[in-house]
Image (cartoon, rainbow, N blue to C red; front, side):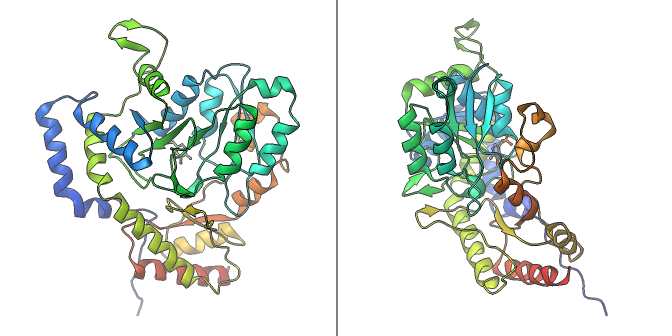
Length: 381
Ligand SMILES: *Cc1c(COP(=O)(O)O)cnc(C)c1O
């Protein structure tokens, strides 16, 4: 007799929604009643709540995490001829925000243990740069990848030494902590995404910037609304990028549950660690002692990764590759002149990393089943 295949998707959005459906419907109903769909009261309320959550003074909503990155760099005056130092092992938007403004991304390899930008390599790169190159470097853009902060103390020290502002790509890291400070509160600003797969996900696209600087917040507000403080009077050329009132209403409901959901993700990570402790072929994610990881993704490394992923799929378990091609080797960035072998840690990560289901909707039994299946698949392929 065949046993039924137990299917587990990477993320089960309807299962996340079910327990809070009544709260969401009530919040959506309020927006339908007042009808202020653009920059309505929920947007301001959510901006205040998220700023407090992230330990930042101000927050400015926008249409997506990609736009948050673009707005941050626009507010810093990034343009043609400028350089922005960043990591190649991240979602595409981190680097495309730079190139869309006509500037050049400078990729620094990652720390193989945390997948975050290698801050020593970053310091060496700046130390060996010409005075002209340093002057042209308008921002350092670390990513808090998979939900763990980059090594911010050394990074902020280096940045300050060269007088370069830091923009945190915190799209995967809402509530993550570095030495007690929250993601998005440490640099000149933090960029967040509410894409449905993030720990705090909207019912569509959404984004936000955090900052401790009132003038910078005002600039971001100006830029997100076509550069106009007063309607039809444009001080500068901005873009149209706002967080919908409807999304803010949904996010306000979800923010109330975020700590409980993060705790569940952290517990799921612990269940994986226990279940995989003796699986020597599987490399577990490193949680630094001075960090609070929020596990937007639980990424392991396995040999023969693509075959393991196929075998997992056959056993009913979805997994994902973040990211199969590091950005320096993307076709659209060929003009930057990087070759295979230039940033070996990012290439090795791209060849062996595998993200397993970790959402707060997963139970201990789910995680134990996934871990056992992974062990079997690694042994079998
Ligand atoms: C999701 C993500 C973004 C982009 O966010 P969108 O809301 O999808 O535009 C940017 N950077 C990183 C690291 C991300 O994970």
